[in-house]
Length: 466
Ligand code: GLY
Ligand code: MN
Ligand code: MN
Image (tube, rainbow, N blue to C red; front, side):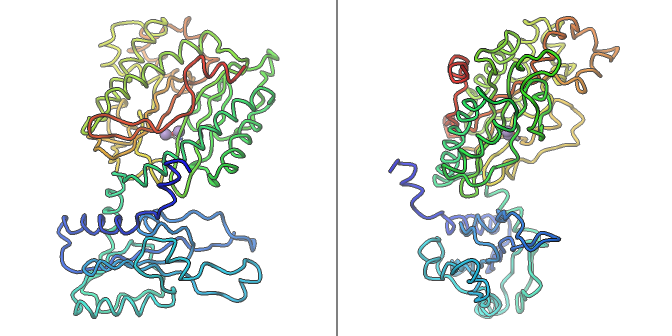
């Protein structure tokens, strides 16, 4: 068993998470006695059909339970430090179709909770917690995530605002078990990225590459995708979140295979996400223009990653990526002018329009980033994380350079900015589409740990694609 699998053979640290969330609430003035109440996602049927909708566990519930069962609930009595999981009772009609559900005794062995009861016992347990605290306890829950049958009787107060924010902020800093889950998701996704490159050699359509990625994820234990994969050949790579994944790899006019494929895809492992982007050539070797752009993006990424450590200001790293992009595009002749002027005028935003990265965890765009989408500065508007990165956080570093007509043309037509872009040189680069390289980075006290193992060195990628 690998050391990673040995860690993951243990229980998800639900109790430690409950304590951290309670501690956070207490630090913010919610002292005294209280109970945290959370519900799992419910089993929901498709609107006009008797099949269940695809299930995705509520992350708030999972964080304090490690339980992927639908229709479950939990309470955490803060003062007595007692975490209780409630699972649905046996429904004899359902057993015919689905077999026996997990028993409370089995659940007790599997999850890091103090006891397991039936969901029929939630209200009596809540009532006994309230009376144990003489009606002085506060019930913390999340608005719109409380079933109609739940009664917070004899609690001094029901607080529906503090808990969600407390969990969102607590989630920023990952513990060792969570890092192991993210590594596992990354290891499996790296296999899937390699399988996607292998599949591209005989593929005629994006769909075959997309299928190879998902098949490899599932076969290795990532039964869900972190997000809808992006498999974009040629100019499709200029659409940041391209979703169709069904275009032909051969250009209909030139009858040639397109230059390259951008694949942004990651498997989800036990509710933890990988988020990885790679670009590879379709003919075994990068076209010269793609290779030039790839080298710039790789430099943006490696120099930014090298700066990462506890407390670093994310805006500074994002700005550094822009400076490297500007230098690279000046060298290619696509941009004209001085580096400082291009930076001040935000011209590089035409080619790198999104933020450098986001927190990663149970959500691909994980909680706690404190973005400011109303920022008037176009260079920082889409930055999903603002401020200092703490040790223990996990962030994506995903610089890109794109040749998207919709985004670049307003710059070319702007009287103030058009002289900064050489349209004749630019003409040769539209076919590149887009290059983005994305890794998942764990911030540590003195530096960082790169969780992503998918190949990205040019020689390595070309060898796989040949
Ligand atoms: N895959 C979505 C993103 O990178 O943000
Ligand atoms: Mn990302
Ligand atoms: Mn991504």
